[in-house]
Image (cartoon, rainbow, N blue to C red; front, side, top):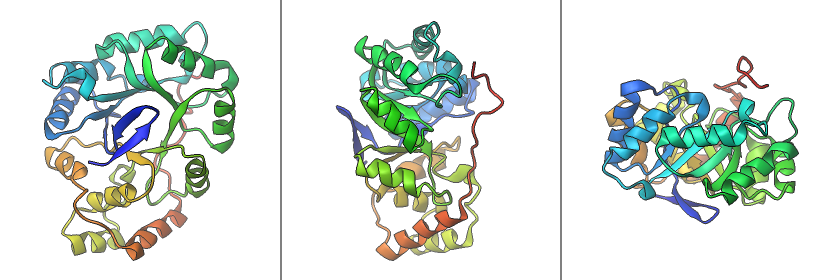
Length: 272
């Protein structure tokens, strides 16, 4: 496994995404993932599965301090009177006294970044979050967040070969800010791409493994793919015993020109 430094933490570069995992299925998948070897689990208030994540971790047989756990504060909870209360509720559901990484899920559409970043820092200072960061921030928003003095350790954004995040990724690399890739497999939308299938055939790997290997060969990138299939969970974490050539890396890099996003802003959700 490759590890990425986030603040003072060494974090597995491949974790488990849990978006849309709920109920008994979520508990079963997360337990299986931990048994396979996953030690980086990502959730959020929006996902409405923090309770299941907490139960799966607590009953996995693996000590809590061996798992890097992330959750995210939803924009409607960024107000001063809701932030800490919502975080404490998340911790109760997760059955833990702290998370290893606490993120702002999306920049608020009305509140100033300068207003709510200090609340994130307060959560860290109170010991409720070991590391803090943001998600879905653009370069301008990142600059504003960093100016508040917050020790942002990552920005979690949609990142896969078919989206053009060149400017954001380049700026983050210049500032030594690791990027966490959600939807690293494009939610499976591109797995039948003929170019991808041809590369996978060369290495006798799955298309998903080729994409995850492409990510792992880049500097300072973490990925949180999701799957409910045990075989694919195993495949997704086993991408460290082969290397793509420089030419193949460049070929995959070029697919970003298609610039296809699979996740939009949560326009229909509550932001107030």
